[in-house]
Image: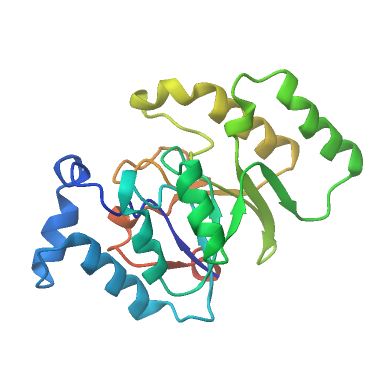
Length: 209
């Protein structure tokens, strides 16, 4: 399974906040960052590969570029993934995770407890994650990092607090996250899957755990 995150197709201003994006594209002979990114991803991922996208596929009207991506894609909804975008991705056959999906053997009582969290956490409806057992480790995949120490993200504190509780209740070992781009959170249990820190190439999850 391959992991990508925060492609942000059509987001011109992100090139100002993350100048490494256009710098890398130009080093490879491109002036169009979106074209560079699509071709770089598709050089690694085939049409038959399983892909987990950790959110923020696009910004505003760049969403139709998603149809150019190879792979059988599952998307964990991020803060920029709007309903219009989600409808389009579903039309492409993408699997959308918009909530807590547990693909590991878990006691039914724990599942019910997680369901009850919606009554205790503000904005719990924005908590999306996937829990899987891979290579003997329990991994929580999410858009937001579970242990987020970035001061800029204080506005997402309710979401990350809920993710942290889920991580601990389910005895997870690793969190693979997106959202923070070139910012790497300090907790060693967290792996940044954002393109900026991975040479703009997809990660093969079995190779990083």
